[in-house]
Length: 293
Ligand SMILES: [Zn+2]
Image (tube, rainbow, N blue to C red; front, side, top):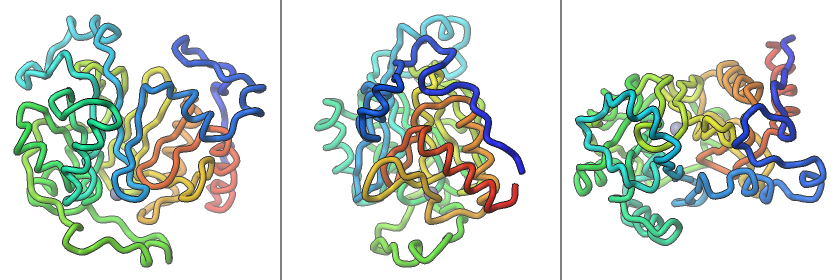
């Protein structure tokens, strides 16, 4: 059986940027406080449809300046270098205006304040609103996984298999379950840096939910934005879980174990509440045993 190693814990990390959370703090704080304390407003989750989050990651252009001078491979996109955030996913078709309203309410921004919109994978509740941004804010670049770009161009969803009874119960009105075709401005394989968009984070392709799914890993290790690679508790924080739809549990456990061992502090999911690494360690051990990995 493979074991779960930990390169760094929440109290001991090699990055200077991580706000240290002491053991004492952890005893005192509940999981929700812990998540917010670590993120410190660098990442904002906006719940658009009951427990369907999109994420804003704050730009820090000063921090990214060095790299921008060296490389400018996205110059043709005319990135807004004064943008305040990148947006991860665009929720379900029908909620476009609600999303724009929430951007204003939660962060005081309009879509014009975004340097990038990243679609993590070709599912209707992530890519459903993308066409609207493309149409009405054509200067804000939209990126998606290269693996799934053709599906999005055709307005098709990536295959994913219901993992259990909950997936069959979970129903969303059929007319909302669509992706309106759109042409992405750029595509990523995973491995790319987002520094040219003002955010010190790196993309990684994680399989198991869809083939092309991209996750956003903050370089300071505060957050791994893993969207649908996993789910979180629907009633409370601190409950790592499988997503309702997946095709390969082993791939998912392998990927998340990698992120855990890299020392990421919080794990942000689209459906359910975020969780920290503390409950994730025991969850991973349990799954590794169950799956006989
Ligand atoms: Zn999905």
